[in-house]
Image (tube, rainbow, N blue to C red):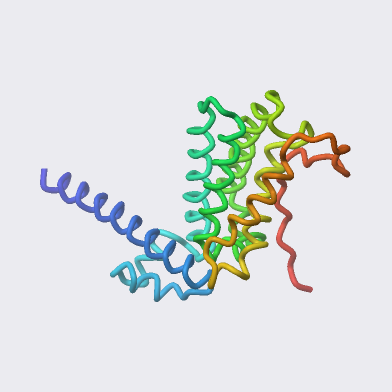
Length: 213
């Protein structure tokens, strides 16, 4: 009985420590970027540095876990909005939610292209996000609310593009991303303009990281 209790207590401690580490790492990376030392993250979490590596074998594994949390939040937003009556408003709200999440996290742009994106779970979740965004975009296309040649993958790429455009302004103008989001949303509206150049991407493929020669 005591062994069972001890095991249950150990599991509870592991769950608690992982949560504390993810919360501390998310806050540290969002504020200062991905170069924050592991020791500082452990200190923020009130844990020993060795505890970090018992949960995450490397900083890349820790970044991957944080990326999964962010992607899950965006997927949940898309799924929630899929039931909205107004498809155009739903797509706008999804994009607003998405850029706001990215704008609050300084580490996002720094993570793009890093090995953490080569984690199978992260790549699978990115595909799920594109599928969720396509479901929203498809409804808006069918109702004539957006251009007929816009895809969910286009929308996901635009989230990062809007954030990167506004990024230099965010330290002094935290809501600057809303200006560029509005410009992008105007570009999605169905018009009599000709088709977009180049075909849409079939899937959001993340390039393999290059090895310095």
